Amino acid sequence: MADLNTLDIGGSEGLMTRLQSITDPRKPRGVRHSLVSTLAMAVCATLAGYRSFVAMAEWVQDLSQEQLARFQCRFHEDKGRYIPPSEPTIRRHLQSIDGDEFDSAIHSWLAAQSDSTTAISLDGKSLRGTRTETERAVHLLAAFSHDEGVVLNQRVVDSKTNEITEFQNLLDPIPLQGRIVTGDALHTQIEHARYLVDQRGADYVFSVKGNQPTLKKDIEDLDDEDFSPCVHRGRKGTWTD
Image 1: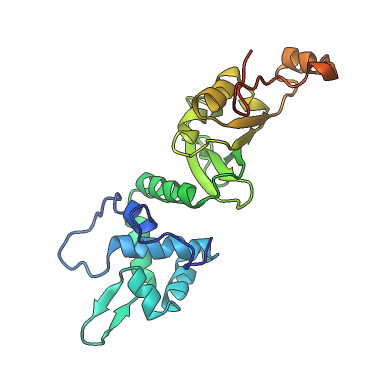
Image 2: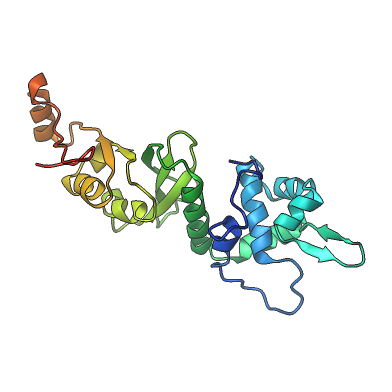
């Protein structure tokens, strides 16, 4: 996904179009580099494996004039060429924007880039180093593509709720028609299954463990002829009680 020739950067639904939704906190006076341009290059540098500010700047400096033009970099009239942003510029831009806006724009774009047939996996984890004496560690619930390992969306699970309540909010922006969604035993919920199949036209693979002993026992007692639990009403994966 880091190949610039295959990424939708400047199209009507491309990366730069989606990044235009991000609020530019800078004052108009003295603005030299486009915020959208700098952010788009930072995203593509990250996809290419360049994660630090210095590494991003090095990646940007190696871009050709044609590629800089594609990112709509500033054109220097006297020098007659496009000028890439420096490391301090990239750092300032990334540190000044609203993180939630940036997150939403990137993930909506990545979801559009992802193979619409690949399975989607759900994973929740707490971030190291974010726990304080008064607050628990930041916990994220993410949806990512199996084949590419790209995060398609993520939600912060605050201390007043859990992953179950964020399930639909996480998946709502992602195209799910005809796809398979996998999750651990926590997400083995009737409401989740109905949402995926009846509302989104998807299939699912959920684990069943000891946290649902009755369901686990019912599955263990199934005979081969009792399976599958799906009823096919003209399309794959229609679920019923």
